[in-house]
Length: 389
Image (cartoon, rainbow, N blue to C red; front, side, top):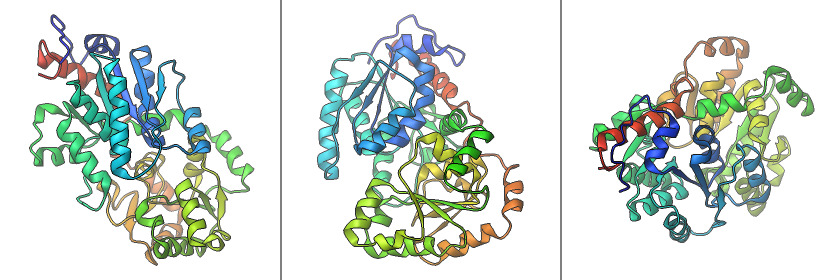
């Protein structure tokens, strides 16, 4: 591990002081949600940070929107790994990240979430003996059919510092015998990422006008998870339920979903929906903030709904974000309950909006990035002459 002899980092140390002690940071990521959630840390770290983008999300239009969402950086490294079978993609990504880390000795590595890219970054950091920080640690669906569940468990047990968004996540880690000194409850960086990107009310109104929409008079839906879109029957059921909702349904079409709609011959089920291309993050947030209800299988949207104070119907067999259950969200399987639960939220849109506005998000107050840096400083301080012991 890199030495930090004579360094006295504390929770009050500035990002510059903390990062100077470890020789800077390398952020490894490969998808749009990772980049969005890491953007606050990129801004905080500034020139002390390199971003390694693996290219796990490799769709051209989607990637151009990813880059538009990010703070400018001269230290953005693109690997272009692309897709493929999960094992092959993981192996190629580990090798590519390994090559990068070989030229960046002495850096702490940060990964976010539960993607193939995050696991590859964690394994490459471990192979190099570099300290690893896991942002968004401790989430558990307890669903072993989810590849992401395997990824997040492995990353947490490799990490020198697990940054848990909530106390529930901390308890999950403790239950798996992750030492308490390796865990910090930080909140989720999605809160500050959203607050930075959400357009003001006037601009949100312009976004709605451009699509012919009225506040609280439409549903915003996104569906992209393999469990929902890789199965023809399940995808048909979901699209059919969305098409029968009593309000217009705005449907940004994920590349994976678009591909499978065509492959399965389900294009006719898109006809009742207002299909859009994937949106830049601020435009998507504008649509989400003014919608009557969100319907989604996205993990990030479950968090964003709690910050935007909007209800969300989660179309999943399991979720690693149960904190919003019974308040901002309800989880349903693919089937009639999509329409039933959406209708329940539509019965009094104004009343639900007023009630939800007073509920706190379980994901923190927008200071997660500062807490992550403070936790990293405390880790360095505890380690004495070696950052990770």
